[in-house]
Image (spheres, rainbow, N blue to C red):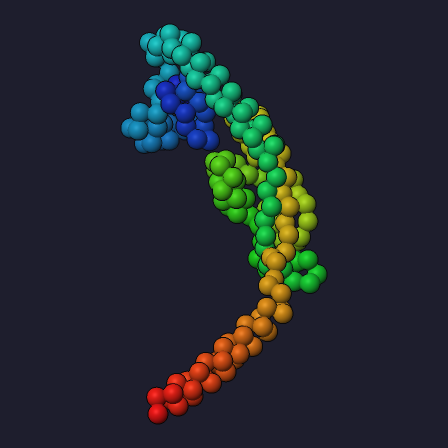
Length: 184
């Protein structure tokens, strides 16, 4: 058996404030009503929501504008992700929606990882990709991602570092020998 309710706040995966929904009776009785997310559907509560309709529509319009500006920000951004990978271009690990969300955060754009849709769930190879970011209502943004290999340090610098240390100890050793001789 289902029961009709009117949402008084936005409820994730159910609807927005002012929506009339039909939900399972137990869900309404045990979760939605005690948390005051909904009110029962009746003439009095319906009249209350109709009276607040202008305020509710203003909130929805503000959310649409925020989503539009976020879409422009996202589409104007290209994320470069540096990952370790093998010679064949295959990543050690993968790029997930959480990785992309973190990189967007570094760029100053806050997006929940659940709103990012990566093709095939993860990126496992080097290359250029486009992912979708779900925004408010049916609004979506396309984000360009470039996955490159982690730049390795040149092998020459790794070989020079021990050689420099050896030169420094050799240079320090003659000075140590001359110091006691000067003291005699």
